[in-house]
Image (cartoon, rainbow, N blue to C red; front, side):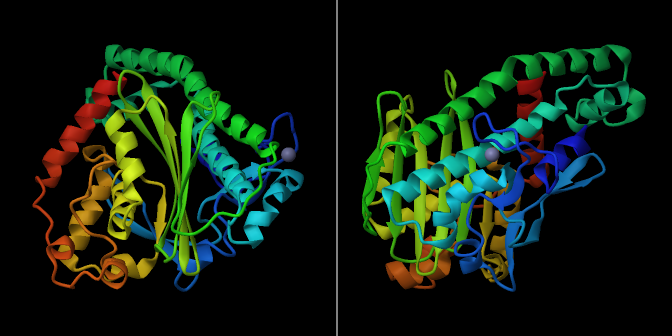
Amino acid sequence: MKDRAKEHLGRNKFTVCSYPECDKIAIYSHAISKKISISSIAEDNHLTFFNPKRRGSVKVPKFDSIGINDCSGFNGFCKDHDDLFQEIDKNIISTSEHVKLQLYRSLSFELHKDKVGMFQNIKLDDEHATQALIDLNIISSESESTCDLRNLVKRKFDFLMRESLDDKLWLIEKLSLYMLHLLKIKDYFEFQTDTFYAFSTDNLKHQVFYYMTSYNIPVAINTKITLSDAEPLNYYFIVIPFEGKSLIMGIVPDDSQKLIQDKINSVFNEELSVIKFIESVISSCDGWYIKPSIIDNMPDEKKKVFLDDCMFINERRFYQDYDLSIFDGLKMEICGLEHDSEELTVFPNRDEYESRYNVMMEAITRSII
Ligand SMILES: [Zn+2]
């Protein structure tokens, strides 16, 4: 089951192009330009990302190295439709047209990731049901698996697949199709650095914002963060690094709490809050690739706390400040902070790993069973 999903996530010769009504086979390409973006923050052609490893029945947090050819790679579009993105593969994103192209590409990437879930839409067999029970920490070994427990998991699994997957995918698909529609509206202009831009339409039901910094933030992000209020709301954040600059983009649902909208509208008033906002996004999502030396140069104690925090992204929200500084060098260089300032050196103690793990697993178990 997992392998089939993995096949579609990785390079392959059978995933179909995601452009509407195209049935050609997709080629492997990048959601974020390898040539001018990913490369601008790579060291020895590699970046670092969070990649927890399974050890027995638990997942152990781990930073890993990833080659620039694989960062944000996916089988998204056939050759013809991938050519749509040539402009932003070869040039720095600098126009309103480029922004829409990137948003369409980034949404397609998120849709692709979630569609992989479709391949999990098969009946759970006894073996997988037992594994699910172990993964959910409901039982600790195969010998505790009973027919009743397995049937419970199987029924719940089927139900969840049927009920939620289509809705979930349709939410993303609708947005990506709308972005494609917006691309046909010609409202071309070149945008400025250090300037906040936002747009919305009645049909979009989201606010799109973007902001080009005049300094490089050494991370590439393409992520969807879902917050469950009365209804689950999807937020999309994209950070595209370039030599000497970074483009920050976001898609925020109109139904968001006011405090989230206020936060985003005020973040771009000063450089420190921009950098801290990106740290908050990193601390609450798993779709980032960072310049390796940022992690390598962290003091050991801080690195350990950050690594564990990456495991428990459920503990934080992107609209709240992260209490651990990631981009110390940038804050000193751009914001004039001293190397011994509290902002860079202080981070509160965390609870024991095991109790955090249990809280997370309980939350997951509750939401599924
Ligand atoms: Zn196509």
